[in-house]
Image 1 (cartoon, rainbow, N blue to C red):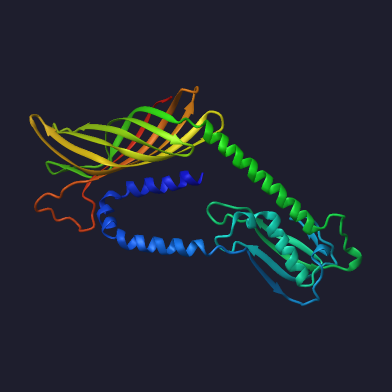
Image 2 (tube, rainbow, N blue to C red):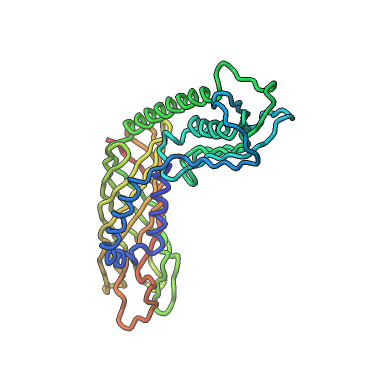
Length: 354
């Protein structure tokens, strides 16, 4: 789902004046390139191990790690247990995936408990990996000291269990990777789409001193995409038309190449997201009089579809369009205010795979 999140961010960026800021972005591109190269160089050399932090209330002689018992979440702990400190194992920042698995994180907590003189570890909190916080398992626990008569070490110690858990997690990761690969292979490679629906001009339009906003009209588009597993390229054509009470018509035309990411989940469902930079044409007309203006425009789209067969699907599409226009003579708008036209479409239509 991470790709879907990235393109949602792109979609919102375009909807809120992305095109109006493109010129400033281009002006600062050289400096940004230097910054990006410096950050990339820094990150590649900064992978770290998980962070292990212990806070002790009492110090005892160190023990062997394989003599430590582990009480998982919810398991009862003997009343005679004495808390000698706490331990937490968290993401060290840019931690490699292998080191982030639960088995490894638990093993680190067990070893720190033994090093601190404890012979039992109680897991108080366990947070699983998340795309929004950390890609690591994170563990918070209490280091305990039990009377020797209560210490029961199975034939398989806590350390060995952690290592077995690690092997299981690695096997699950390999299986998930294979499944992702199968879904990517089964993803359609060539897609032709035809959509029609409702579009809304969200920017302000002034006609004869009357201001319009959220003006709706007919929107339709055609598109073609070619995908290599997840990523692909394509082209799209979009047309929008609306009329005003004053006898004024507005037409928008967009054409341009795009890049996209496509993910298939389950047997029938898939979604994709595209970002397109191309040419937009704005035209207003009234009777025989007309005015048109062309220029750089940006369009992004999110698409969800249901596959009826290997060749046909029905989809729904949400898109955003932004195009800057030339400011008229005497215009006194805010320097940073966007002057142009922005539009959001909700479309549905057919997808043809070949």
